[in-house]
Amino acid sequence: MNILVMGMGYVGITTALMLAESGWTVTGYDVDERKISSLKQGVVPFFEPGLDALLSQHLNSGQLHVTSSVKSAIKQNQVIFLCVGTPSLDDGSPDLKYIHSAAESIARYMQEYKLIVVKSTVPIGTNGRLTEWIASHQISAVPFDVVSNPEFLREGSALYDSLHPDRIVIGTDHKCAARQMRTIYNAINAPILITEPKTAEMIKYASNAFLATKISYMNELARLCDTLQIHIDDVAKGMGMDHRIGAHFLKAGIGYGGSCFPKDINALLNTASGHQHRLTILEQVVQVNNTQHAFYLDKWEEIVGGFRNKNVAVFGLSFKPDTDDLRESPSLSMISSLISKRASVKVHDPVAKLPAQLSSSPVEQCDSIDEAVTGADAIILCTDWNHYKYADWSRIHSLMKHPFLFDGKNALNRREMEVAGFHYFGIGQPYET
Ligand code: NAD
Image 1: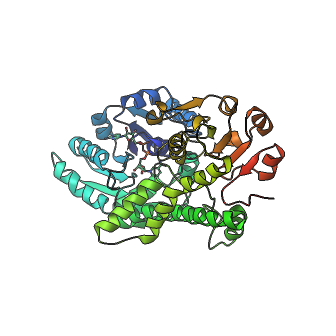
Image 2 (image 1 turned 120 degrees about the horizontal axis):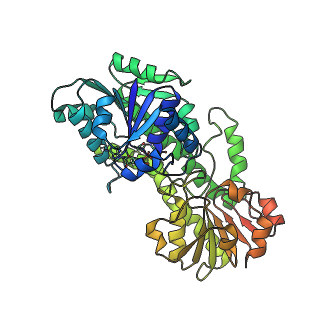
Image 3 (image 1 turned 30 degrees about the vertical axis):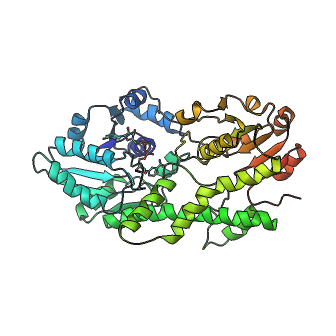
């Protein structure tokens, strides 16, 4: 089976490599010519562990090739995975223009049966509407099926997640399409759930919203733990030992971010309000998340006696470690708030770069940790990269003016930091030992 993947972003490249690993002959296409020329040279245009090596391997073996010619790519492949972006519009609903432009190309160039697999996260009902949409844009009536196949990978471990998913969700009403999907995923050892397209779409949103709920729940509890001088991580450990709760996603911090949780929750809230429903729990999940970084920044400001004219080193820009993705990163909100409090900010990230909207502001990106912390009055850790967990904290301490350390991810060990000489403050932790 020849498979085309449209959209060579985080999901598309990972999916293309997963399919190539599964033994299929895969073509990757993107409208962004720079991405395609980078991929042709074996270079993944963003940071994601493991992708570069596998890309070179499959380009060399001929199992994968990339192209900027959409017409021939659609003609030559029977199965088409749609992995294009679905960013938020101002009202919170997803912008489907990339889905529509990809679907328009398919409608225009298809000359025989196509199985169109929608991996992009799309509002409930989109797969059904897409079928009508493609049919109405076809030049001649060629048969096709649209299947919902939501993606659950996490950036930072995208390849592993794609090759070892907890489940594969397939939304289709057609037995033949379901059979073809089972064949495509034959090499992947995971339970397959075949369901209706609308249910598959809802599973994706409900899963992300639930994970975000766990995080906001812990973050709000952490605020109370601060006051009660209880360590939220110990609470999480005890909770997580109950298999009904599960140990994952119980880590308190300065809030969730990334390209999916904020966008997908807004989309689900938008869908609910469009049907005269309110998802009040999710509204609070968003509210807690939107206020979490400011809640802690205000606390920390009191501790240092105001951030005005203070030198603050921010550790981490990306929304989580092992990715350079800055979309909705809490670190960016933290930096903006520090600027509005008139702090002088230096940032360090092992991989990610300051985005354009901040690069003209009074923030300096430093190549080394030493550079960022020299003369600093405080450090705020926003991303729990291993670079910081295993940094030489005694040396960092020796370079600072005042040793205030605010750990927005509870990534560091309080006792070790105190031994190194820091005044250490985490999220939902006792201040005095
Ligand atoms: P991305 O922005 O990294 O990549 C999208 C790519 O699609 C871009 O390279 C863009 O140039 C390309 N594109 C746009 N229009 C196109 C067209 N007509 N034809 C071909 N290519 C086109 O996005 P992403 O993070 O990979 O996410 C893709 C989808 O998967 C989204 O719906 C997202 O919500 C969902 N998703 C993302 C993740 C994640 O962690 N990133 C996880 C699960 C699901």
